[in-house]
Length: 294
Ligand SMILES: Cc1cc2nc3c(=O)[nH]c(=O)nc-3n(C[C@H](O)[C@H](O)[C@H](O)COP(=O)(O)OP(=O)(O)OC[C@H]3O[C@@H](n4cnc5c(N)ncnc54)[C@H](O)[C@@H]3O)c2cc1C
Image (cartoon, rainbow, N blue to C red):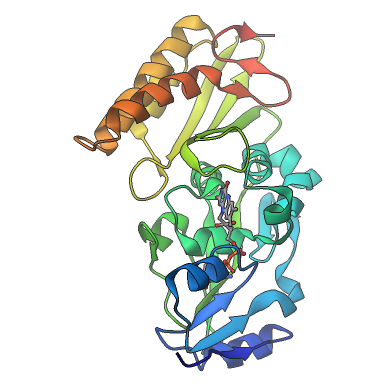
């Protein structure tokens, strides 16, 4: 087996020069937690490996004009601890905190989580709920921005061109009246890939105890994380109480059935989704759908 040529760009200019040489058999290397495992397990090598880890300007979290901007090389450990995300996009910080082990979170990146396009990718579920856009650069030095939903085309498949690298993911920062959470179920309690995940964002009127502006994304159901408008409408304008919690849980089960009708895993996923939906709590103020605000 021929060995891959390794390029180690040290900045954006060198990265675009490296991308010019990319072919469909080339790969970008970030944390390597998916790519290196896949190369070892499946006994293959790309013709060219472009190591992104020297492009340090792709590692940041910034708040600019109400938009949160996260560089593609930002690791889960950084996302999990970032004060801007914990304040304005808590579901993303929570999703990052639940990825793998501390060793994985120290090196694995948000760009890799998106590009790997696993149906179980935790931060992707949160980013879909947040309505994220993805910015890329290609070998011609051209930048483009498109919705995350246009990047994900199937399990393990993206619309990224071979010479296209993700540079940033961005979304509107959540306001003080918005609450958000992320939860997942795996086959173990820790270091586990999601069998189901859910990210929920609502506006909460504490005086009236009413939720609105509902956004729900489900992950590890079907080929990629998605929002379900019918599920979101169920909660819109409702009080945070036991009846709403029941409606939400039933709606989540129905959304799973719509997404994977006839799939062998449907009975398990519907049942598990019921438990996950009842577990949903909203953020540090601990607004729970099933007990009213506390
Ligand atoms: C033990 C273990 C546990 C795990 N647990 C979880 C978990 O709980 N939740 C979860 O979501 N994931 C989990 N993962 C998967 C993995 O850690 C994530 O998908 C991670 O985000 C991949 O990022 P990376 O930087 O390591 O990507 P890499 O492995 O370097 O790359 C992955 C893919 O993305 C491409 N790529 C990387 N960066 C870019 C970029 N900027 N632009 C375009 N393409 C790019 C690469 O070419 C490759 O195809 C686990 C992995 C392991 C080994």
